Length: 330
Ligand SMILES: NC(=O)c1ccc[n+]([C@@H]2O[C@H](COP(=O)([O-])OP(=O)(O)OC[C@H]3O[C@@H](n4cnc5c(N)ncnc54)[C@H](O)[C@@H]3O)[C@@H](O)[C@H]2O)c1
Ligand SMILES: O=P(O)(O)OC[C@H](O)CO
Image (cartoon, rainbow, N blue to C red; front, side, top):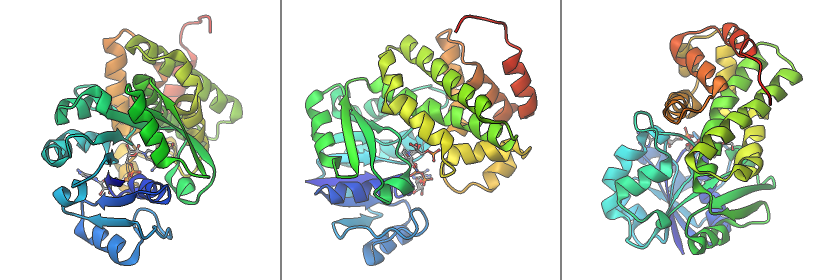
């Protein structure tokens, strides 16, 4: 089986390693020819996944039509806000029967669409051809072959099982799910909550604060999910609580780290200047907030994260506002 990974960042590269070790011939499409060349010639992507030797079955190219030719599965791992423009160019070249799999964890600004919705719309494919992989999967840990589990969500059970088979390894245990909405929301909103967690960490707040953020963050994620038609149980699973805990508690998380910059009092611009890799929550917090408002769902932590990120509110003021909200039952 040939699999293509569109995007040569940390996750696209780690995922290509997974696919190859599980038996596929893998081609990575890289935005920059120099990255593709380094992967081809040295089997490493030093900029995104330093020190990780990729299997011989992984190659790379900057030529999109060549990258997707003959692929049975096309995995997409570019920043969420760039997906629509990229896919508009890519779609005509993608084989007609290929499964398209989103590895992304974001919500599109302006449209408030999930990545699978953007794929269906832009590539004009049946929703059953689109799957999502989401779970507690920090790229450096997966590349280091540390045991982890993940979820493959697709409305077509047969395709979900094919993808499950294609990524199953002694160190990666994939489960299937038919709850695409829940899995995608879990992945996108945990990035927003991880920003808050990072702020709290940098502000010197302790484990009670941070456990409260995780728990109430999960509550507001599930509230939105249910309003959108997700299964509430998904949020107790790997793509919900699992990913939220991994992202919040790991210093490897880009979202948590970005939140730490803001918690130290840095401006958005200063935090962005010191962050090379994608921290999806920074943009997605706006889209998640808009989505919640459109559905009349209260997401107080997301609201405050958006205000700190984009309205210059001091995180200490945000904490006071969160704590001062009207009393209610849990
Ligand atoms: N890194 C992880 O641990 C991890 C794990 C699971 C899911 N994800 C998700 O995977 C997605 C990609 O994350 P990543 O970690 O690979 O990010 P990254 O920042 O490491 O890499 C992003 C890649 O996209 C490319 N890119 C940037 N702008 C682009 C554009 N306009 N058009 C095309 N390509 C562009 C970059 O060159 C880079 O190769 C995100 O949605 C992220 O939330 C990441
Ligand atoms: O580094 P982050 O914050 O983008 O998180 C990476 C993964 O999504 C964790 O599952």
